[in-house]
Length: 119
Image 1 (spheres, rainbow, N blue to C red):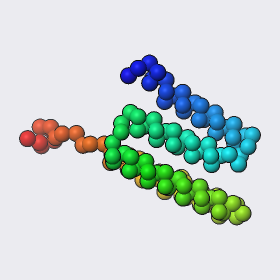
Image 2 (image 1 turned 135 degrees about the horizontal axis):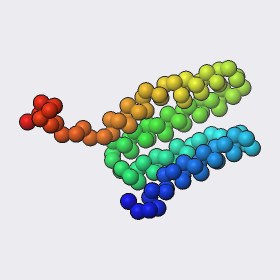
Image 3 (image 1 turned 180 degrees about the horizontal axis):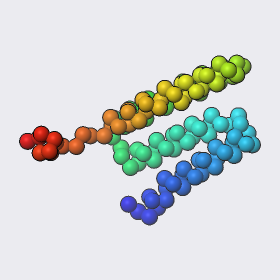
């Protein structure tokens, strides 16, 4: 991997974290835009390192989930408790077990070894 490749992911993460913090302090209305930009950038970085059709489908599903989550929070903006409950449930609690499991399913299984009972 080139030297620039080693800097791209941490540099992008620092830039996006700073943008999120700045948006939260200065202009909170931009948080959904910054969060979507962070998600898209993270997905693009993953795909540059490991482009695989299964991974593309998982990232598309995550994008749809984020869109539904932010749309629901936006629609419930006039109801603070319902909006908070939606955001915590749809954007945090439900995806905690699902997204890592989906991502893990995009990796090919290693070939069986003699220790695993393979040929």
